[in-house]
Length: 442
Image 1 (tube, rainbow, N blue to C red):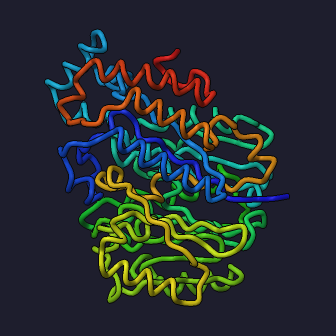
Image 2: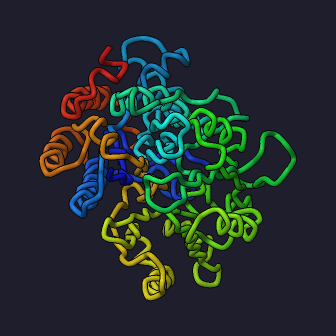
């Protein structure tokens, strides 16, 4: 039976704007309060999905969340009609309205952690929704993410979707952005490497400037919920020094696929010991470790070199999917061409313009959730979300109907924007055959 890795990309929402909400994400802070283009963000994302689908990869779409998040604002004590809630929050705190309007769910690498059926004790594909509790604007995503994943992966025979961990600091979980899977063929049992930034509230290794968002306790709980075979588990700590340089998730400093680990030499604590363990446990393990003298951590963060997608072709070899910023940086592009000339599985580079996402701190890898599926599991997923020529055309037309091409923080108080968003998502649920997954549809 054919087993492949599918990528489900998040579609940027209608309130995509630059609020600088994510402390520790330097691109987010650098572009705070600049003018965004939600329509362009959505079209850039759709073009990436369609291009990869055309190249033969399994590609799906995950819809945005409803924003501004009126229910969470009411939970905070703001009352009245929806338009009155928006006005009151804007008067109280424009940044709070930004947080309730964030389109950060577009980065679905943070949506959940996935365990393929080959690694699960019950032979189902498992999803544990991330609580994202390190940031208020992201912590409110979990319930909607769970509803959406259940609508896409509805077959109980094939899939199991778990709710997020408790919303407390001890179990801070950032999803697949801190999770790697190694192995040979996708359908064979693999090795899952969970990366954490700190362990509980101990005084052990931890960053001093920026927060370590993922805890070991959260990673261990996710592994239990996902029913990961004990022999498929490995845990390692992210280097706190690089977290303090803007590496807020592991996927900003490392990416893996099958037997390959592409990472910076400063990515992990006790990195040589980790690489030795991977050599022992992953047949044919191929580490591609980038030295600081070739690419500094700062340059890796600025170009999102490692926030790339590493994709296997059925014919063999791999493609590295990169943001335009990696090509525009002379040193990074020089290293990538050196990598292509070397003897390793990476045979091609594919560059996308994702500037709208990049300006908020999310590259190609942030925009996708990796889901290894057998042919039967793929057929059991909601077919309406799978990218093809027709869906690409329909979604681009949908974006043209509803999305604005200019948005600032001040626009978020506009009740018409809220209505546009609800009308657009109501239509989108019909296009993607999701049912009434949004609270405003209830």
